[in-house]
Image (cartoon, rainbow, N blue to C red; front, top):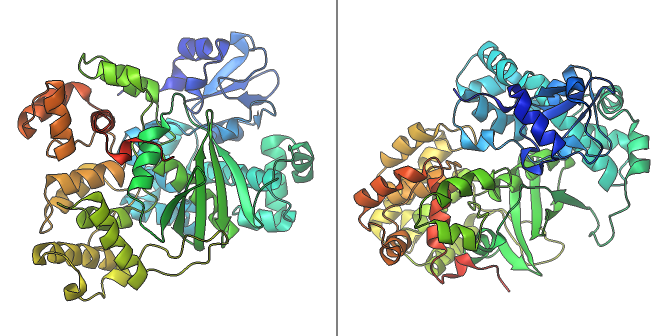
Length: 493
């Protein structure tokens, strides 16, 4: 097993002394003399090495009695790329905790989703992260509380329950313990940055590790946008969100050092879930330097990486939605797939009220689509059978697609469905399940790029050649796709 970053003291000290932002979120520095914890890139003068100790999570720092630095705000670091790179129990648990499962369903609900006992999950999280699921969820609640305190004028009592705290007293105690300030003290220190927000909207900054190339990321989302559910407007990608307590609308705008995020939520309890899903859709917790270094080692890919480094994999906020859309996109153009999806949205989607206009519906749930008449679908009979089988299994729970899905197992289950070939299973693995090593050797765009670059163009030979790109073949797909002049590769004007 690879050595955990926080246990490599020499490497951590070097990162702190050089203020290397690449390692923000990988580990946290706790200062023994001041009892505060920081991100590696904290702008203050680094402490002496003998006064540093390192932790794998903010929750572990908090459990050890350290409070968050007021200068570098370590709770706002990008998430560790480990949880998006791996498919083991700890990584799957961390993705579920970020999605708010512990707050909604408790540790027993987390255990049930993962198929392990609560004791096993607790033991593995403690061993790797220094904190159990309750402490990790508490740290997330504290971060949510800080966001609401600093970006809204909501009463503190409402913020406490929106952030997931069971009582105002627990909220006050947690904020004081984590940030060494009262909730009102946090608000007094916050910069006033709410100008320009629509009533009820929250303005946030989503951090990422540089570099980030927005072209294919936002280009793909905009070019495949389903009318009524998604749109590109005024430099922002906007879409509706189906959330645990209601619906939401997210507007995401690329900036040089962050993603500007504007959220409008029917229920503020959904804030951490909405943030987590937007970050996941934009692949913001990736480590682009590690990815690009691996791909750059191939002399064929090196010029593509050097030309536009930092490509991300455009993902999704709803795994079941993406699976339906992948079936709709089988063997048809992007425009045709959007047309099919728009018809389903208009007929079966839940209507929403968009204060800015343009967005009209949530994408239909599997339960809503399971009731549709197959003959109403304007597509070949075999694809109709594929779609109806998929939505039936999603609706009755026979097939589950989520952040906790085991990638190889789920891919095998998808391939067992009628009409599911390697392309459909792999594109769902790549963009819905988040497998960073998913590969599409049968994709026409990939085969065309391979031919033009002098790579093998048959699926078997290309797969063999791509072994050197592992575990980042999904990112290699983005670089290969980018050789085409398709709209998915360009930031909309």
